[in-house]
Amino acid sequence: MSLDDLYREVILDHYRSPRNKRALEAATIDVHRNNPLCGDDITVHVLVEDGIATEVAFEGVGCSISQASASMLTEQITGKKLDEIDALVTGFRKMMAGEEGPDEDALGDLVALKGVVKYPVRIKCAVLAWDALQEGISAHVGS
Ligand code: ZN
Image 1 (cartoon, rainbow, N blue to C red):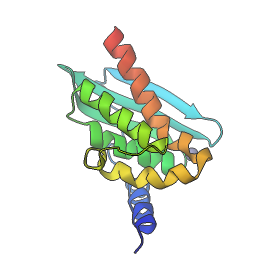
Image 2: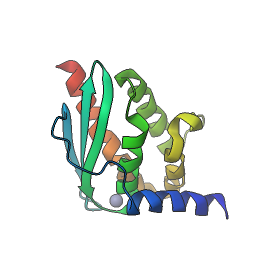
Image 3: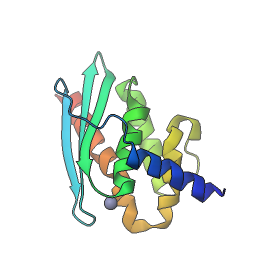
Image 4: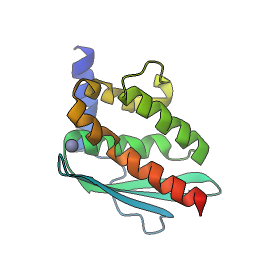
């Protein structure tokens, strides 16, 4: 099995069995974003307690890349401090910009999205949930 096949499997697994795909009544952050180019629609919910994302969930519809990326996002940021999440978002964006050096251990399954860099129109799909997350965190920190 090639690395590309392995990555594809990871993406399809998250798409078919999304993690934390549900409403989150108690959320402190709720941000909705859509990507009209592809029809992707994502809402990210985060419950922040003492500067830590204690619960993270998402709801949405769209292509496998957008939904898998949101599912991976919820797994990777749950239990992390907001500044750690900020560093993770920066690392993920660097990877999606095709830059070298993201910490692959910190990114976990998200590394599977690295192959999307080859398809520029799909990068927007991969970063959609992250745009929503970052917007929500900045608004939360600023408030
Ligand atoms: Zn898409």
